[in-house]
Image (cartoon, rainbow, N blue to C red; front, side, top):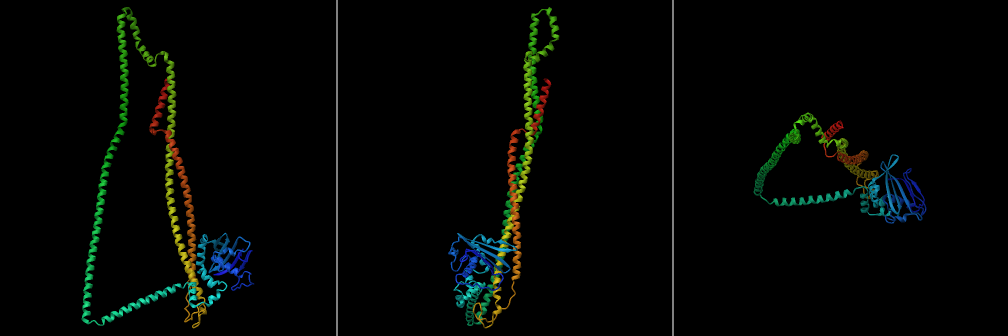
Length: 557
């Protein structure tokens, strides 16, 4: 980690904004009189990275505020390999923090900035050092540098192991020691067995060999029996499965046969219903003919009754009038059919004096027919509107179903993108950890030219027996892979955002479609209520019959 720029304001001795640029020099020194703020600059670097300082810790941060100010902030820009990072912390009531990475000319906010604890962990992961290790070896507080130099070899070894990720070597050493102990125990057991066998004669050894051979043959024979039993058991399992499948198929066959019988009965009902439907017009025609015959019978009875009355009257006339009037009656009788026709007409109309009432009745009937005809026309229009609304509702329901399928597919695609992004994020984090470890090893390897056989190591103080061989660093390949994964992760994020927008649009269209469908169903209910319970054919026949009745009544008028 190399600091590039430090900005602070209201922090310690710096009431106003101050800036220190480290980018143009390789080695720099901070000098000045006591109280000028040298230690404050070191505290600012430590606070920016870890959120605490050696002098105040994490809980006494408000003491770092300059007297007379209520807010302080520190910002540190540093380089880590090929990456440039910027960390900002603010003290105002509660501590705020932000971690950013430079991407070209812009700064991209890290997701670790959501919480201070998460940001602290992210900084530790980037640097490969926690707060204690940083203050012990990189940025030593006043009075502790001497303690680091004068510490014993164990303390310096533990610190170096922690700094450069070599703690795993201690675990390897412990496992090696444990393995060595196991091997020594097995060697002791082998020596004990060897000492025991030295006192055994050849006959006992041969007998033991024969017994071992017999036991091996017995083991092979039992193994063959077990294998045969397992094969037989597998065959029985397959037979049981086939038997169960046979019973299942038989049950399904019985169910299908029962369904076939029910279908045969239903087909009989349908056949009788179709026959009845075909015979219905003939039945209706016969019923109409029967009603006409009944009306004709009633009219014939009335005519016979009138004829009998006329006959009786004629007989009484013959008895009362003399022969002289007979000729006159015969003359009048010639006109009797005409008079009878007029009489029947007058009787039907209630007499000649009821003409005006008849006309009023006909006009009222005509108006009633007009009203019925208009109502029938309105029902026919309402039924046409209802049929149109049904078709529109069916189309809308199909569109809603298609949208629901598309929404489900888009949601599944979004979930797959999310899972893929999480997996890429995990791989990228692992790769960054490897990069940090390789960079630490590269930092350690950079001191290799200082190692001299027989001289103490400048880092740990132990004598150098032989410098470790130079190894090719995989940093370039790891960094290229990290860039590739980062680009692929950003591509997945863009695809996820696009899928999220598509899902949002689909949901809006689906809600609009459901709202339109609900309104359409309400309109359909009103149209069906206006159309009534008659079918389209009934309404058409009613309109035709009313129109014919109106024409006939108009002709009579």
